[in-house]
Length: 491
Ligand code: SAH
Ligand code: SF4
Ligand code: F3S
Image (cartoon, rainbow, N blue to C red; front, side):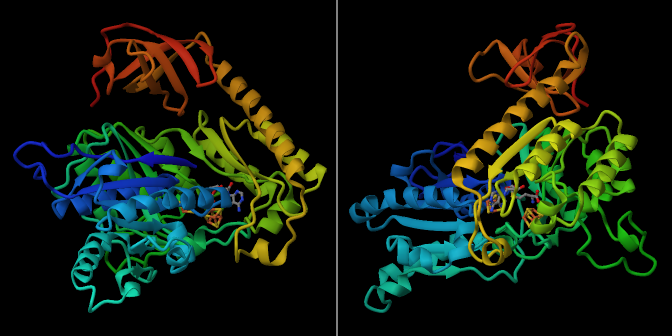
């Protein structure tokens, strides 16, 4: 999990339509996954519409928000320590507003105030869009300290029954060529180790038209690479109603909308060059979905399809909803229809009752499936999950650590083997950025999601080129541009 400090739009002197120089300043610190990064952008957009400006310097902000993660204990501990850092600042500047939003806020609710008395606002995963209003309410209450007790000067909004309303019209996007788009929220599965269904609630897929509008808005702002987000993104649409009689049937179950339908529409959005998907679940891999990946060439042929473990016993205790055999069949279906597809996986090591043999199963499964990208996590019991309540966290930390390192070693070797197949070959690359470390270097990705770095002019950023792979690196592959100056312009 990473931390991101946001400054998504120019601050203060942003031209005639920019915020006033004395506009109040917002600083957002984001922990956790891409969904949180997206939510942080939505929140910033709301505040900007209310006349705020963003700042990258926390010490000069009037409002500081922490967008939090609960997936492992470590993520929460880091948040508490960052939030704690503001206690002193708050004593010196009582006007400062400190808010905590996101998954941890949703999980612990008022406990935030108990643990960090200097926090003013807590907003859950479906209420964060209310934050500008909450800040206003808080400021009104602060004006009248005789009418509002100290407790009433701390506001909480964690209702999960509402949908987040997204409307980006009139916003400016300053995130460059890359953007996130959450196509659904929540998760309807209940893997026994996972806190996400508690923090994010039941699945709500967003209507296709609304998503296409947002994608078009991004494209109008210069976005070329769009990463679609959902906890089980290939179940998109399953929660929606069946189409009205007479309405055109879509490709999901009983004519419902599906990810294939959404991808078809997004393929048609002019300006978008690449569409990435995070994260798939094996249970929802269907033939129409695989055919959509094959048919729409903007969709990256790299799919994160977490296996989590290579033992049927462990998968059962995790309640993942598949056996290794079923996983193989789904992965094979993808490979049959899209032969050059690359898959990635997440792994949990040291889950309750994981024997040496179970773990060796994960090692073998990773190699067998040849996953290009692997994220390995040590099992961490999360409060009130089924695994925490009904199973025993019986694997010693030292064993978890060792298994973690062993699996990572195999992951590295497997990745190198996947990449080595391309050495000496010319591959298509979409150039996504210049390198921060060396301005002569460009970074891009193949259609199979492999990172490639090569020397080239910055004018090539945002175009499709071909490059010949020299060698594999820890980052991906290093290459030479095939025909400098003959890049194909992005469509
Ligand atoms: N929805 C996605 C992943 C969400 S969480 C999916 O189902 O694949 C991201 C990753 O964190 C998971 O894939 C899992 O590998 C890891 N994870 C989740 N809960 C965990 C826990 N309690 N301990 C360790 N790792 C965990
Ligand atoms: Fe968590 Fe499982 Fe849902 Fe993924 S599919 S978010 S691991 S409950
Ligand atoms: Fe963390 Fe919530 Fe994402 S728990 S991983 S921020 S969905």
